[in-house]
Image (cartoon, rainbow, N blue to C red; front, side):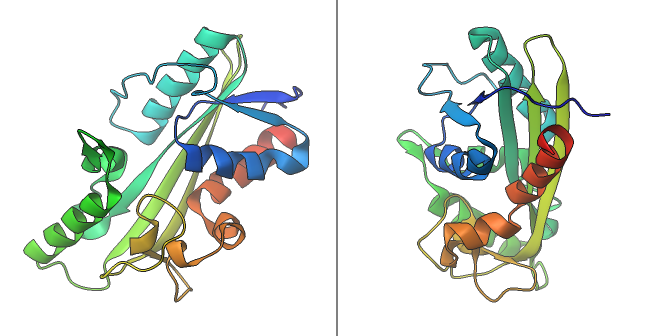
Amino acid sequence: MTRRFDGDRILVATHNAGKLEEMEQLFQPFGVSVVGAKEMNLPEPDETETTFVGNARIKAKAAVEATGLPALADDSGIEVDGLDGAPGVYTADWAETPNGRDFMMAMTRTHSELVDRNAGKPWTARFCSTLVLAWPDGHEEVFAGTAEGTLVWPVRGALGHGYDPMFQPLGHNRTFAEMSADEKNAISHRADSFKKLIAGCFG
């Protein structure tokens, strides 16, 4: 039996403005206000785990300990079958530069490695999102979601963030970056994990 969330404020442990905005939209119907880690001046903890759930747990627990608020953390990334599941939990690392994250660089690297490996098309991949909701008393709930699809090259679309311009979800002929926020939020990996969170803790 999952624990029901009965508060009206939740800390989303992310410094990513795009992710925070997505969470705000998803929580709106439930009358829960969202505050981001950046607003609370929280440092970003080192993500030292090798799984999505491990890294989400680090972020959620650090946020709870720093603020005393219940915290929701998401760890997400893209797994490319032709690269043996890479970049996976290291998706953001592939985009790191001295001047911030450059996902065009990360997508270019992904394409180059697929070509170098002679990976056969379609280049199947999935976005993964694992949510950890942690309470100040140490209780936590975990929800994992995925969105299956294929990678396209050249990239298409200017909306979304991260690998969205390269990812075409299954059953669609447009990339996530060619879809409106509402369209993407209905079928994304985070929508999948979020539906499970809502059913488990808010339903």
